[in-house]
Amino acid sequence: QVRLVESGGGWVQAGGSLRLSCTASGSIANYNAMAWYRQAPGKQRELVARFRSVRSTIYADSVKGRFIISRDNAKKKVYLEMNSLKPEDTAVYYCNAQWGPWDYDSWGQGTQVTVSS
Image (cartoon, rainbow, N blue to C red):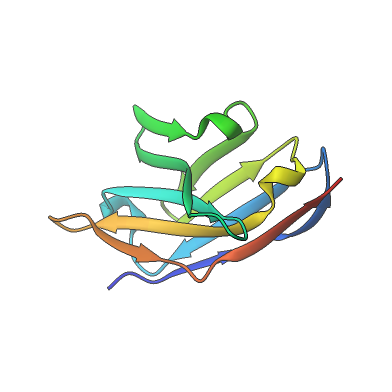
């Protein structure tokens, strides 16, 4: 079982920046993929950024050029650097890990990000 804990959410004005952190219970180097998703009120959960390998990092079109996903294997952490934030980025952000032979999914509890105009 993989446990994930997010932190770093909060309130910020449009144009500002936040950095989210996700701490995993195990070695993230052993996971198949790490990702950030978000869910705004009344909307489905959507992929924000996913890191599968150095050559396989993807971003949602809506955040390209503004958000950066990175990881620190030694600290068992994955980060989401969010810049030039917009009110439409307001959502609960979830950390996700895929692991094992069948890409089992594990989720964190989520962290709220609110961007005011």
